[in-house]
Image (tube, rainbow over all chains, first blue to last red; front, side):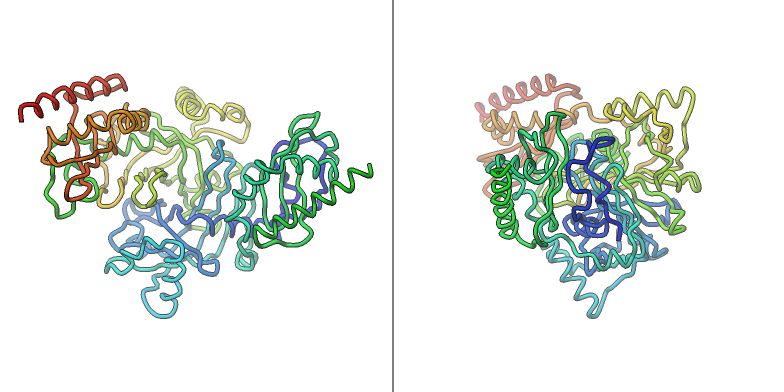
Amino acid sequence: MTNDAHARPVGDEGEELLYDPDVPTPTHAERARTLVTSIGTGTLCTIAKEPKGFPYGSFVTLALDDGNAVLLISELAEHTKNLRADARGSLLVAEGGKEDPLANGRVTLLGNCKNIAEGEENERARRSYLGSHPNAAYYVDYKDFSFWKLQVESVRYIGGYGRMSWVSRDDWFAAEPDPIAPHARSIMDHMNNDHAPRMVDYCKAFTKARDTTAASMTAVDRYGFEMSALTSKGPRPIRLTFSQLIATPEDARREMAALAKQARGLLAKS
Amino acid sequence: MTNDAHARPVGDEGEELLYDPDVPTPTHAERARTLVTSIGTGTLCTIAKEPKGFPYGSFVTLALDDGNAVLLISELAEHTKNLRADARGSLLVAEGGKEDPLANGRVTLLGNCKNIAEGEENERARRSYLGSHPNAAYYVDYKDFSFWKLQVESVRYIGGYGRMSWVSRDDWFAAEPDPIAPHARSIMDHMNNDHAPRMVDYCKAFTKARDTTAASMTAVDRYGFEMSALTSKGPRPIRLTFSQLIATPEDARREMAALAKQARGLLAKS
């Protein structure tokens, strides 16, 4: 599995790493599955009928069904006409949010697309798609709309600068989206607003950033969390692990509290 | 030129139009040029080397240079390797913002891509690109990065539901981006926050929505502006024109004030 324990947070090039380099981190396959699961829109790339042979990009809404992408598209749309003539396609799904657009994560899924108009597979696609896009209920039964599935053969993951790889098909299908992802923003806000001193303790007690004067949380996932620690040498990235895999915001709260207690104990002794 | 005076704002299907159907509106070419000009990111679609022949979507930053798209990309990136083998490409540029993602506008530019590593064309590309992406200055001279141009041959415009067309190459290159677009959000906020009663006057005086009780501005461009008027039959779309093409927020202010005076005069007589 491709792991980016060594594709460290930006900012520490050529600098000593202040935390354990072997701290568990999500694999690229997990990061990619999480990203696509959390974002319901993307660019569908098809081979155009007109102008013939050109790669054609169009905006679509999508959902994942066990790792394959489900689309609900109209026979009237260019991309559907293109897929009827050539099944090859890809989907680019990109995060937004960061000020530098190239620092955002993105995933390209490549594979053949097939129409799934009937049967059990159609029922599954419908459930997956409407689960992500409930507002589509009003046109899901329009005659010109039907479900298509992009059957994933290749996965390209780019997590920002210097964090990229081809994810193997097996890793993609085995990976589970991070259960913490939907809650990450609120966990980070809570920690940054209400527990800033606690994070300074984490940095002082568990890392080499012993002169940390302020810290803010920049990421959290099932394995652990990342902070930007303000040290005498400027802001430095830190990653710490939880004592076990977590799955809920309550798990995160419990782990953060246990770490705080442990940190206070260590700091009292030093 | 494709004009969508008749692709009316959503909400009036089967209902009487309450405003002049011949009110000037931006053409699809103008809407497309404006959209791509205001958004500096998109999906580049290329023909993949691996898996061979598949359409490959990747995230890029871009700028327009006289209607052609300029990219600054690395030889290390998949899309650049793809373009070295097959020059055919497209760029999907999509708006965000609306709650229903399919209601947002998007544009696909199709054409051949060429590397412009040297000469006057390179200087122009550099100026256009760095004008839109000043932060790229720190890697623009990295050895593996160079400028590429997608020479636009075909343009597909989708402005949301029921507003779409192929824009002719001539119309695309002749169209100018709307000078009001960068100011539209602040003009609308100002009108909605500070001049709501004035907009009710516009609706009562200039349209068939004589029973309007509230109105909010939903769009503004060089030709005119759009409102959602709350009538006894619910919210209805309205479009009004300015007395002349406008180019600045100050022009908009003057036109809005003149229309308000004119509306009060008409309403006083009725």
